[in-house]
Length: 555
Image 1 (cartoon, rainbow, N blue to C red):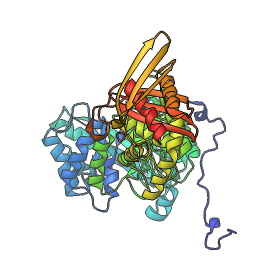
Image 2 (spheres, rainbow, N blue to C red):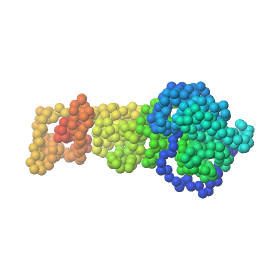
Image 3 (cartoon, helix red, strand yellow):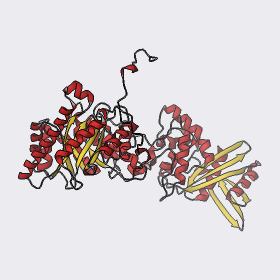
Image 4 (cartoon, helix red, strand yellow):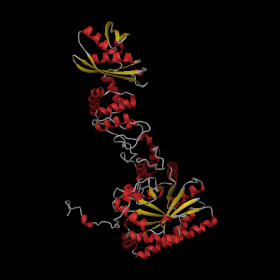
């Protein structure tokens, strides 16, 4: 009994799958992309509360072509007038590129098959996808037919598809027809029986190595774990006569949340072709998400042969025509999937990016691919909030303003960024962060205290003379900062030491008040009042260095 009386696991049984003790797929590795088939315009469309209009389908069609799909299932033209009209527009308006094949779905019923060929009159190349259900539950409870009767339906459907193709070729001999059969609910069908039905269909079509048919194996309802579905696929392929004359296609749904995994393992099991949709739109929990599977391959160095470099463009179209918003954590293309809020994650990403060299294999913690590959810049990788540490604010200031903060500056500024994030109650913008940085270090506020300076070098020694607020400071040392410390001691009697120092060139737009800063300097001082950090931006590195030291002393 379940610990929760409302749950009744005893109601359910595991779906039987072949006992494949010598399965080969776990030892296989993928080396290339499958044949991709978008079913967004058909399977995805039929799952929408408001199906797409013809104009919406056309808009999505062009995005699918631009992405690089070479086979696109455009609809069920015998099912409704809009579906028929869309098919005709593609053909009559010559919208189908020569290297793209359209696919249409039809049940194994003669009048529907006849109507389908009417819709496709004059097409250059089309896949006629005929199907009938073969699962136990559908045979027994829906159709109330025996195995032989269900197989006879499949055979008759295959004959009609072939006969009407021959008739269509008389009027349009240039049209090329490819036949596809699906034993619907393959995942819930006895695998031996699925082989038997598909063999009977192939006996009708008589495909060859040079003129293959397509056998599509759907997990119409995902009822098995991905490994057991892969067993079904491998068993089917190993037991199918004349397998070399068939393209094995997979069409998985996502009821168990494993549609991508099942499709990926099916490729290991020997499948050639994958049907799915962009972002997984489809009935119930959805279809197999082609974007996720394609990017999975890409992340392992396999060319997916689809162009997902501009997700913002096609996601906007998908969302418009489906009226479904993309989840911000959707794999690979969600708005925040490359974003780190955690301080430790941010620190690891920042350090790895600093070490990542052009031409080297990608090797960055928490980022499985370079976000720039799919049109994302680094601005959104790290976002500062109350969970962030020193690395988060340092990364944002580096990316947006070119501030390469030394570690001791990061530590000094981290509490300021933390307090700002807590006050904001969410993500801190780079603008707010930079304003807090300027305010904390009084950038640009004390530049006028240094009225003039002169530095003389004599071998390894330097002499510095400063005019600060009308007073003259003078000192000598082995470098400019050393001489400045000497001048400060002579002027005040207090001893100071430079713990660390850093400088670099500046972004042209980062100087406060619109001034054109060329350099920024960071100075870490040990004073009688304690350790302090001074930062300044100026036209040259020497000026920035002196101003930074003075700023630190004033702080």
